[in-house]
Amino acid sequence: MDLTGLSDFTDYFVIATGSNERLLDSLASAVKEEIKKAHGYNASIEGSGQTGWVVLDFGYVVVHLLTETLREFYSLETLWQDAKIVLSVQ
Image (cartoon, rainbow, N blue to C red; front, side, top):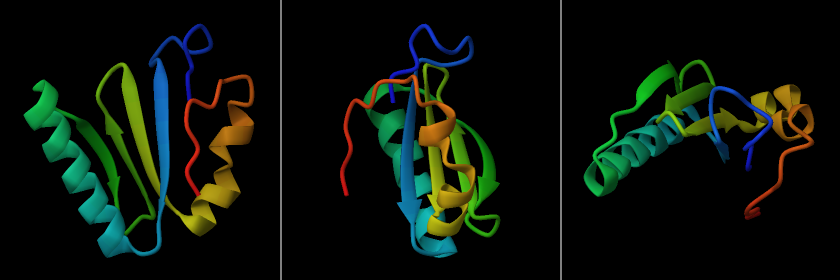
């Protein structure tokens, strides 16, 4: 989601769903490693697969990894409905 002009703390959200805590932890680890390798950025990480929501903050991009239940409950896409959807993959 492109939050440019809508948010003071980041420009983009990446939102993904994981089916279980192990998958969320694996996704978080892979994203962190690949961004570090490709761009040299270290992520600030909050949450874990066990909590159902992992946030990786790279500054201009914030990655949200959630269980399906929490993604539906918090509905970030609805909360930030004025943001432009850059890419949606089902």
